[in-house]
Image (cartoon, rainbow, N blue to C red; front, top):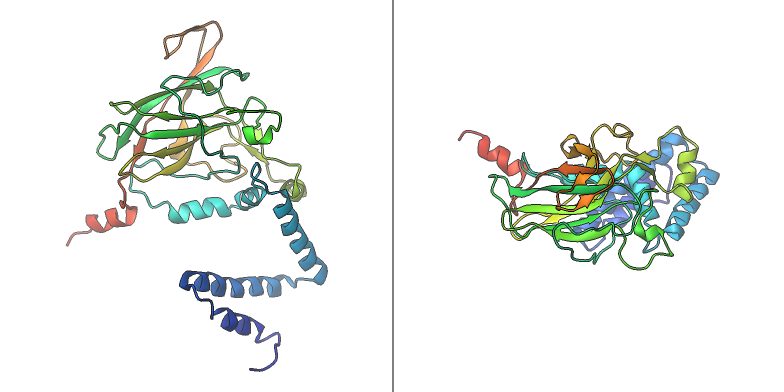
Length: 300
């Protein structure tokens, strides 16, 4: 094989990596190389820029810990996370859609009874979320799992608070026999993504908004149904149209209603204003896809 030249180095690299044993990994690498090489040629990448880029990625790795996904944040703000969601979100029409997971999910949240408060001791106006988990036929799904988490009244998640011990603004709820659920928390607020790391430094050199609209995270699952990773966004809140991570979908915007002090959905009497959200989640059966649905709709 000839020595490497500007004209043949891309083909040489692809040929070498074509020896990758795993078929899917081989495809991923050999398709990536031409794009990376083409980018470097298109922009005329300099030595200094190449090294600065590598150092930036190294710093992103150094800032990534079990408590903070700076690598996920980089993917989020570049739109890659949401693009991947869109490429893989092939749920049938009518199912609640996916959106980004975000960098602050914590596994093993506590199991809570219907109406229990996952924001115990946290400042903020009380918020009650109720609704039904249904299938595509409109039938209730009993025993569905709602794994939830959110930021506090200052836009901070539990994993960002080193002084906190124990669960903080997160919990696992279950739908009842009629598919209904009831959650008590605090009303979410919009907040800035972390700006103290390398991703924040990159954004500060732009006019990009680094805020997210008010939202609450959910992972929904039930036996026999496809798991979804999703949010509920507050209708009318700021940053819906320029969410820093491109995560807003029309179907996930919900009405938040503010009430004067009185009796809450849990039956407790509150002497402060509170919020209510009524929203139904729709799960698709395992294996059901929009593609399969479209094929069935085509006349034979």
